[in-house]
Length: 145
Image 1 (cartoon, one colour):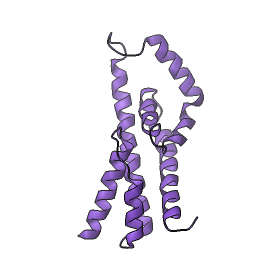
Image 2 (spheres, one colour; image 1 turned 180 degrees about the vertical axis):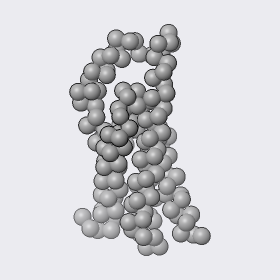
Image 3 (cartoon, one colour; image 1 turned 45 degrees about the vertical axis):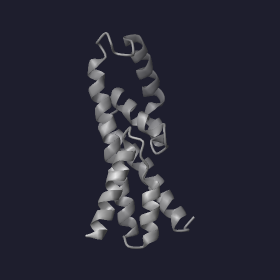
């Protein structure tokens, strides 16, 4: 039971950390790795899946909020939105490689939804970036780097 709760707690922390909530999962991952009670690769997999799914929530929110862009109260004008879309389509997809970073990563995943980034490319790039971060945490924690 203890082992399952550790994985579940890590999943929830990683999921929450990927949303716009001010949470962090790296310290929990490091602590669980150091406890030596869990499979190393299982922890990395659980953290990665939770974090990517949290980013997917941001992407979905971005897609949903975009439906309101023609409302008067929407904070961005049609002209500004078109300009932002042009910039995003020029550089934006690859900015998702920064989705692992604190503070800027979560808004990038929301913006990707607003800018209608295709789901397949969003998931591919975000999974790569976020898994690489957890692999780095694992390597640093276990002294592999």
